[in-house]
Every structure is written in C-alpha cells, then in structure tokens.
Length: 297
Length: 49
Image (cartoon, rainbow over all chains, first blue to last red; front, side, top):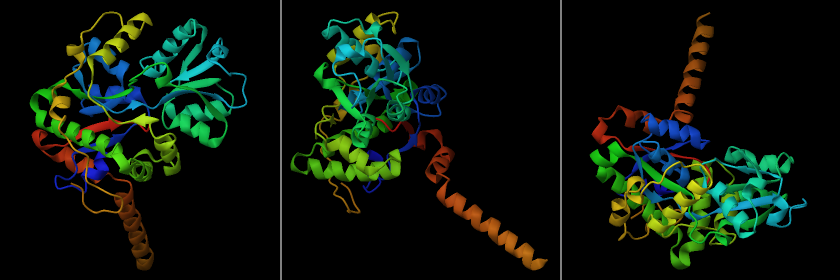
C-alpha cells in the first residue's frame, strides 16, 4: 500500500516491494542480502536475531488480523473440540502457533493435544475445504477466504485471547540500519502514514475499500473482494495503528516462545528491536490521497 | 523465403517486446544497477497480513 500511494507523491517510490510465497524464502533472501528488509512473523524475527543473524525489528505491519478457522459444517464447535485434530499453522516460529498455546491454556488444555502442521498460508483454505485439515490458525485474508467461500467459520479471532496481538513485523538488516538509517526512516515513515491513512476517521471505510482494490490487483494478486472482506468485516478486523514496537508485547512473545520450546535462551528487547525509527515516525500524518487521485501528499 | 524470415523476426520481436513489458520488473533491474548507497531498499512481503 505504501508503495502504491508513495509512487504518486513528490518523493516517488520509497522502496522496491518483492512478493514471496513463504516465510522460509524471505528468511533466506534476507540473510543473503537479496532483500534488505522484510515483513515476517515476529517470532521468526526474534529467533533469527537469537541465532545471531544481524537483523532488527523496526516497526509493525499491523495489529490483530489472525484467526482460527474451522469447517462451518464440521464437528469443531468449541476450542476443546480441537483436541486430537489437525490444525495448520504458517510456521513453528509464528504468533499463529503461539495463539493456539494461549487459547489452550485459557481453556484448561495442553496445546500439545492439538496436531499442528506447518503449511504455506495460500494453501490452508483449500486444505480445509478438502478436509485435509480440521482447522487453521492464519493471518488474513485466509480466514476471510474460507468465510467468504462459505465453508469456513471463525472459531475465534486472536484478539479474543491476546489483546494487542501482533503478527507481522518489519525487519531490517543491521548493516542497512547502520549505513543507511535515512532510507530505513523513509520506509518506516511511509508505512506509518499508510497505517494512519487506513485508520483515518470518517474516511476509514472508503480508504480500506480502495486499498483492497489496488493491493489485491497489483500486489497480492488476489480478488479485491476478498481483501475488502478482510479489511472491513468488521472494520477493526485488522488494525494499522499503533504500529510502534512495544516492549511488553515482545516480552510476551519471547516468554511464549521459551515456554513452547522454540527459543532456547532469553533475549533482551534491545537486542532484537530498534525503536529509533518508530520514534522518528511518531509525528507522521496520514497520506493525503483519495481514490482516483493522481497525486499524494 | 525473405517473407518468411521477415515474419519470423517480426513475431519474435513482438513476443520479446511483450515479455519485456509485461513480465520484467524494470524497477528491480534499474535499482540493482545503482551504486549501493543510492539503491532503494528491496522489501520482501507475502500476501498475508
């Protein structure tokens, strides 16, 4: 979204967006410096840093926007019904896995009673429709895809068990942070402005409908109607503010990663987050851009 | 023979031009040719929130 709107602005294109289909490929591209920055799930970013990969989280992509989905006509009616069933997650290093542990804990269950399998996000809705899995825990628009097609039902949204839930974060290579901080700041400023634009008071609904259209067509290569559903039903299904990385949110993720066996040692917030760019973007205002306009400010 | 050759060259040229216009991401190629400190950042994303 930032790329699309900024292309109409005076500063022009701020960065080069590159589409990937899975997190492991993003990880490799980041490590080999093919990509200088990436959106990835927060636990994966933390795990990379804990393994010594020189990257830092500088901003969030959004808040909420993940859900556990089951078959509409299936036997799973409550969380307890997931016991012994196959649940797809995007990665062992994902918040979508951690939310299952959190929900299990709150329901007095051991999440190890669930059979979790890793699956590429674009495959989960089809797998649920075909009966290959019993549920999936995934970010939007895949819960919306299952709902819209009529075979899926949201068992719960992440916010139900995890207030201020975060999933995707913006990760930047340490050498880029050190040598090109102005480029990182420009990127973060642009994302902050996009977030504010999507949450822009009375224009919120109209902006989200327009964003669904151009992001679906030109970036996600998905049906804009699907993104419209994900961004507006309800309107706070995915939120784009506040996007500054907060210590308590990440310390919770680290604690859950430690408890669930995907992180073997503690790591301090400062080691994996650099907050200076979020602080630099704190005075940003929404893009001044409307559908059909040929300029953005 | 010359007609056939001309047609073949025209067809290959047209397909090449269409391919370069539709399938090649020129902003990536041009960006990769710039000096390191002038390059825009390559930012990876996947079609999921």
